Length: 373
Image (tube, rainbow, N blue to C red; front, top):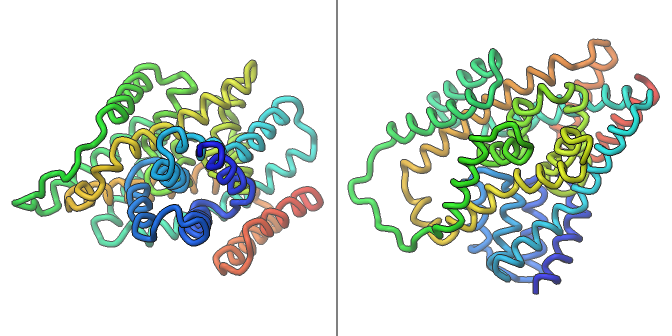
């Protein structure tokens, strides 16, 4: 069973371009419509849980589908299969970058800055429309973004998330008769999640710790990992190295969190494979542990208005975090030539139109970078 599930997800990991939204569509087509592993209702329930939790929603959804189909071994087999192609590509980019820096690489990095600026702008607009549905949430996003523009630090990011969650929880009307849980959460995965979180907080400078903290804090989609990762590794990598990895993660199939393989290898030049494996494992693990711990109790948890309000507050902070990261480093790193600014505008218009695939835009950027920069 696990071997078959691994092969199914390996194939998807090779062809799943387009980011988390596209991945979810692929999963529904393959596992609901074609293979009928689960019903539409089950799929919607699993998707709602993964969007509620921190972590990479599409990878968590694949994990949850395989968990329902074949248990814990199948779930981790699905993760490995879906992530392996992008992991190898991002790790290869890191090894190549560590080995040499040819002249054409500098031009490619300049072009990738344009692509990253455009992709994040598009994600920011979509997230703001989805998560900022009222004046309070808009204010939370705006104030968070302004605060992080002055100090993009992990402690401040976490404080803003916790503060927004607490205020939103208290602002939400209390339900007098809250239903009792129909099923209890699984304690062992949740205790392991908390234990590893405590270890990561106590040893913050280790690669595993840094990426585990990021995986525990990412609400609102893979793009929110950008400001978190930049805050953790910004002092160790140059802005160009970071943006190259982020832009490359848009170009490969599979989860965007595979950027962690590139960053982990770059942070561990003496043992790049060890660093890549540690970073990739750490950033995905928190979300998987939470899926294992809360999947049985999800219906009751999602029915609590105060819990939903707290998550909404965290998502609003995530919008502010992404806005701050769009300004610094992406906007500040934008090449100042008129041609580059014009190209960024054209790329943005094409992406927002919804008629030009991201892969086509990536090809345009590569050609522009190598021949015109």
